[in-house]
Image 1 (tube, rainbow, N blue to C red):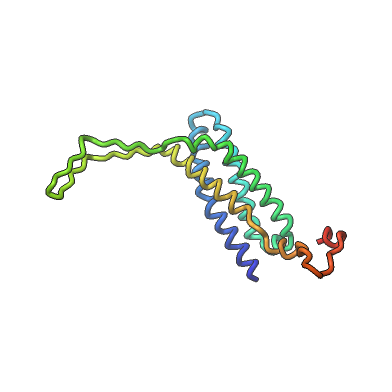
Image 2 (spheres, rainbow, N blue to C red):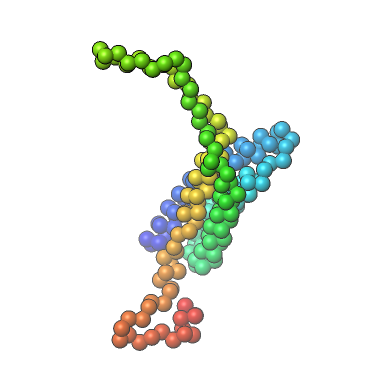
Length: 177
């Protein structure tokens, strides 16, 4: 029962993280499509991986009765998504060096000894595409962590290490587990 609650809450948190990621990347794909340009590979890769991961997470939540019986298969597909997200984040790595915000001010700073501080006007400009790509990069790293979790059912099936004086587990039995 506790495993079921943990599994469903974990998948719901994955879905909550994947929905804004898919939305931001869909905005990019739509903008490139509207302008009749090819979408860059680094956007397409992470978009396709996140759409497939969202579909997989949604499918496993709604078909939990099948997912719990096939914990090994679910774990293998999750590990596949870990690898896919690592590759997608690697292709998007150039965005880490970008500066998405620019701060400018009008006039000089002035300070009066009477305790008053006069500040010039400050203007902050944020590049929306750059900020969205940085957020997608961060969500990609979060999804690497979320999809790389340990399934308790798989841990329960793993043979325990032999303690001092305890009988050893035969090799054939350890492989069958």
